[in-house]
Image 1 (cartoon, rainbow, N blue to C red):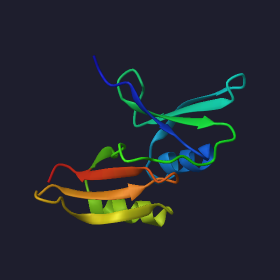
Image 2: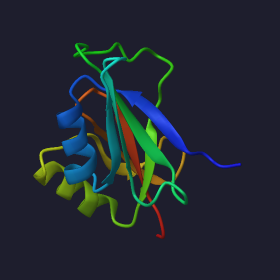
Image 3: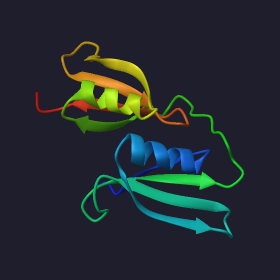
Length: 128
């Protein structure tokens, strides 16, 4: 058993695809419109779906905004150089909402960025 994907509902699919591909560096793996259901699914990730988990971006046509609620936490990505990664994200137009530093009550270096819908993406420095 393995995780296949995590689904996020997005208000503007093009903005979300730009963020996850151009700003974060994922690849658009597949995209399909479902006219009868009035929605589009786009899958992004860092490798093929048969070996890597993906993010499913679900765009329900006509819905521009979602309430995130209090249950959602974040998606976490491992990075080699967190400061360089945050700088690159910022330069690409991304929003860093927590600068790199040790996590509360720990030593792991983390940062947070926010996607166009307000979802948090945690960056965790690895290999240091």
